[in-house]
Image (cartoon, rainbow, N blue to C red):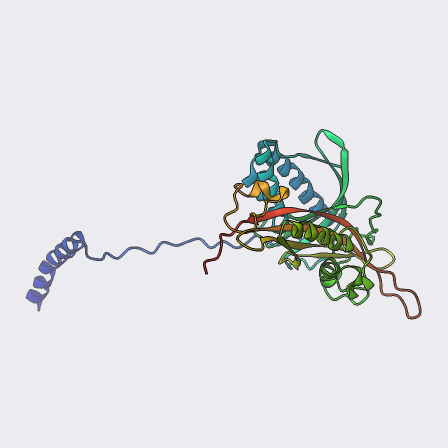
Length: 352
């Protein structure tokens, strides 16, 4: 028995040596497991008027740094959704024209901060503020700016900015004693048009004009029936050149925001796309010209017989309260708009 144990003991060094030699020849070697420290996302910060005020000031400061440096990538980190599209197009147009990107001066903001569930995302708020182009004080306009925070690890971004139309009064948003506004639900029954449908009503009037059924609930405006009239004029001009113009307004995947107004009704801010196609009727027709507002997005050539553009448009509307039975029903009306062409293409001719 003792002799047997001595034999085993004598063989252990040899086995170890062979094992090491095998590893040296490329055989799999067991590696120690590395422990990865577990990190948890930061605790949610409740949205308060103070939090919104700091977020807005941070945006104003960081936006100006990006624009002063002409740094498009940095500017885009502070925007999302339609505002990112408009910001990218603005930087590209400035480069095309050889101009510096505009910088802005902001006045004292009014914050419309809804009371949201602390752990719920996305969080959002709207700011009403005077904004002018740096060095051009007469350019001042009243802006409505919507900010969004999509998750704990994200930072606040500007998702939408639109500007009050001339001679238009901004509806007063109802603010409670604690400084909070009230968010409208998507299907709020107290207003004339469900907040989620306001954009669709406007798009319908833009497509069909004042004869549309939708015109019974929304007033005529430069960005409702005015859009319809503009399209008719442009279509007639295109026809004289043997071209066909198609104009379609569609919904976007971007968020919209509704806030209760004093005395009832609501302020709704949202986005639409305007898609246009200018098409030559046949091969003998000259190629369509690139629209001036899309030149900075193309290389100046038209491969086929068509020019397509997409504009990103931001709006705000006042959605009135539903009238009581027997009382006249006021219509919804547009109060703010902003937008630009953000995408353009000249697709090659399709092969038969």
